[in-house]
Length: 280
Image: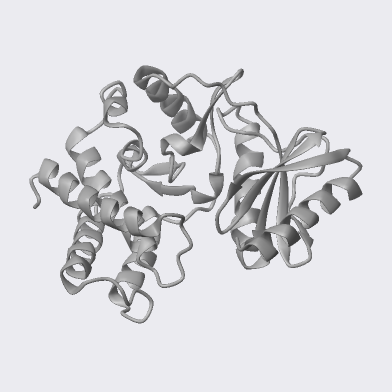
């Protein structure tokens, strides 16, 4: 968010928590992108604040978290002191979560795979209306194929992303027999190492698809510890994920910090993943 919008988001998060009876003496910005995460102290709440245009996503995330808490999934939980819902204030959608102090140690691949298996098992136990992963790919493909929405994307790279998104999505999505509910974007930044053990966060990306689509977001070594995973499918899903990441970075209105570097890295990763899959 721009500085002026961030100030409003902080004020909205603070005011919402105070109105609900939580003590807020200090607000720390934990993460700032198109939505922000704020640590409120001393009540120790993580407030997720998004522009109201993202209200549907925020409500979906709260719904996912509420269902997963009932089956003891390894995910961050909503703050138990307030009603589990999204609050609207000053054109922002605000949800309140338990704050977990992150541990400094890295999560080992075997532990990453273990939390994946427990999370996927929990996801199979809940009933939730979620989009198929190919629906998200279709949105990314629309950005790539619309020159007005991605005007800086060179023609050769546009063709690469369009072919990867369209071709792999169709090939992988045709067989839905093994599909289940997934996290959607369980990359290392969305897995916190806490005193409670590793916990997944950012649950608004939940979708349906093969477990390999989730595994492709994790370091390569993780899939080797996940029993029954199709490693060829992981490689193809990794190419698809990097193509989707690249599509977002080439959007005209993308606000990712260091966007130029991310654009170059994304395209390089797509090519590398296609090479490993034998699809280049």
